[in-house]
Length: 290
Image 1 (cartoon, rainbow, N blue to C red):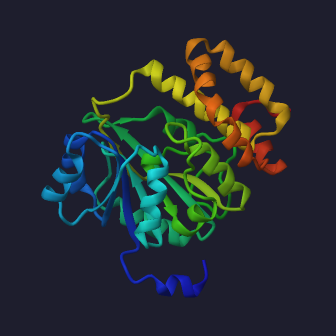
Image 2 (tube, rainbow, N blue to C red):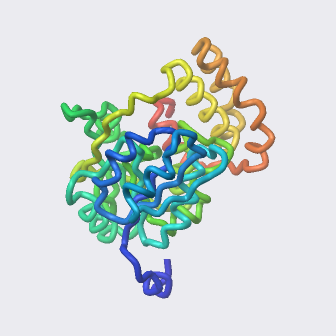
């Protein structure tokens, strides 16, 4: 970002972007917890979400979509924000009091940092999400110019992004959609030279909604995203191995493969292989490095 770009921003430094669909009650409970302006992108809800939020929380900017765009809705919210940073949250998550401002200061102190993944505490009992332990123990180590272990993936509802960097890689795309939308963004940020880091000094609270896909359906969707991301960014030589793992995963993998097929042409049109140095790091994270 140029100094002119920075000077041109006159609003708050950070905006919270929430994408939601048919979770009206979760939203009405979580929206007051955000300590920054909120942009809600509604993915075609049919439960009266838009009207309810506008009535209960008039300060929230609501962008209603006619159709469910999945994670792409977050990109539209980020484009609308006009802020230097965007904090993503789900309708059932929020940043801990004071931690969003603290995360912004950490980002400003580390100019190569494009994405900060916060610590995630789950439920009223505040259990540490297991993915946080994996991030804290990242095989990539901690670069000297980053505030925590380096990542090649993240959890969207616990991420603060530098808007400039996020926009430059296209944000979340219309091919992968949701869930599993984070990998392609992470690969492109790292490929462009940006840093991604896990920072446990700041916290996200996540109280999982009761309105969630069944586990089998969610696993199939994750396999779909994994396969499409691989088509877009992984070396061609790695694709047969991933297809084999999908088949061996049984029904979820096979269903994910079938769901991915209609979007294969779009994925191939967006194909851009990751740099060798990034692929080496991917293999280190998956334990496949020689």
